[in-house]
Length: 514
Image (tube, helix red, strand yellow):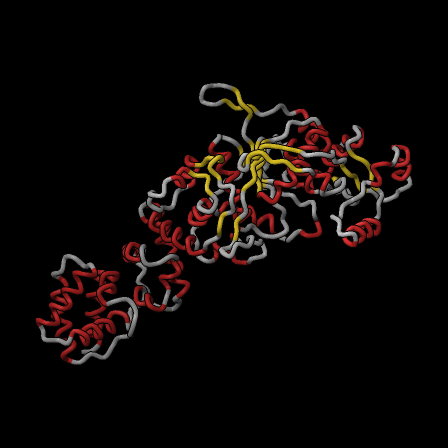
């Protein structure tokens, strides 16, 4: 017996997974899945679906499964599966079962599960819920053209449903190409959506009997989806609202197999600020784009969490904005709080979350040290061949000073802030300049507080005491400390450089002019 068949038999007889709640009462284990197609790379909408499934599982001590739905082999993108798994890891989403980590319900890639689908298609053929269809692509295209000409909705006319079992078997034995179609039941189908409430839809009014096994031996999305969810004992299906219309069709398949269906919840769309649906073809919503652009993973996660509700924090508008950790978001998550209306994609809020995440990281010693290393490497790569000030204490001072001024670490590499890392070219100083700068150094050493307002007062007092024109004095200081004609105020420069670095630069400038 082939190995895959043995795996299948084991999967069929697995008893339902059971867990116990805090009172010791047995209950069905929570198992959710994220099931993307490798036809592109992970984008914001897909990440939102994955993250809400992950939170749902974490909040109920459940399992989060990654399943790759690659039945449409013609649209596969090379490297998409590997990149998708890397993107989930980068975002902090831990897969409990999947292609990379394995599990008891594998394989977790649909193209490796073909025998399962063929077996279950035969089950439906035997119980009369499905039939062989021999209609050619030419006939189906003519049906579509005729329907459009008559201003009707194009759909299959169920012609092969009327073939007798003998006729169908005869065509199969003769090698006539076929697919397998599922018999749709007429009338309204209903279910309770975890987010939208009661939903009803008549599948038969809008489509003919759907194909469940294609002529190439691969299943269609809908059929493989149902079979896999059952065999993997998925308890809750949380997916985008675009799949809501398919749910009644899926429930028909569950009934045809006499299987208990999972509970369904559909997440609202993410829309652009102009009200149009986000498209995976937008290059700037790929997760890899955010990673390469300097967005922190947790900032992106909070941005997603802030776009569709589902959290306790959303009910209190007086809560101060912050970047929550995944355990904090897990504790707050409640599927009943998810909004039924579409969320809007507002990029400017992402930058604000990035700033909040920077501030949060600086409050944690270990994460602060990681930031220092990241900045050190970033500055080295950006300014090769320069003598750089990359002492840990200096970088920490820079980060704390900049926490309310930048949105990305890369902002620290701007031309206006280049002086932070590189001492400027020594400026020509007159004897008078050297004289009062020497005195300025001595007075600066006596200053205990180096904050912007105090420094501005100190500068003015010094210029008055030494009968200097304040504007010229500031121009000289700016030139010596940064080599810039514009940029941050001189007080900010001294504040960010610190007393030690400021004095060192002033002394070097005086020394090189002697």
